[in-house]
Length: 192
Image (cartoon, rainbow, N blue to C red; front, side, top):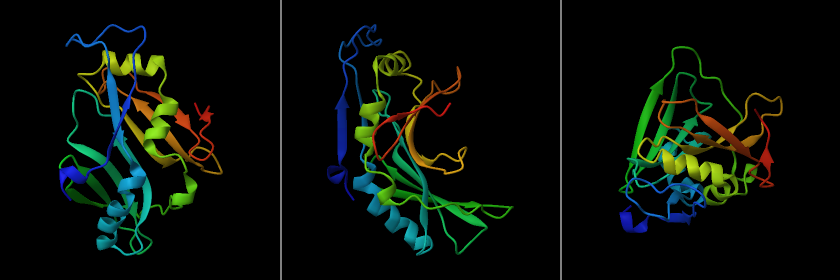
């Protein structure tokens, strides 16, 4: 896959009452790629490991002026093995990497995340989760940007629903902040 074929979706978001970043620009934008667009190729790579590989979670870095070295990281497990899992990464240039993760204790097999568990794609989820306070955080911390959007099962509840989780992080300087979205209804969730 070549860079020209990557489907990057830009979500321009204006900061209303924030001081501009050090560069002096007044419009601050963030972007995130579509998980739905890239999920088939992530699964294709995972199926080279085991044909019954299933999605455990996917995280997508929020791109700002401080570009990240990868676009999507997806974790896969397989019922065929309880000693290994993998991480498949889609890199900025469109190439893929696969990291095998060995487990000393048996892998806890989880319920797979299926496409019908989520209707809202990552750009829509990010747009729903971003408010003025989020944009202010991203703009202030644009040089220490470790924020990401993650599709995962919320394991702290008995029904273990699939959620979008926005993690705002300044790379460990202060505690991370979280917000959650129901990927079917698009409603904000109070899961703190």
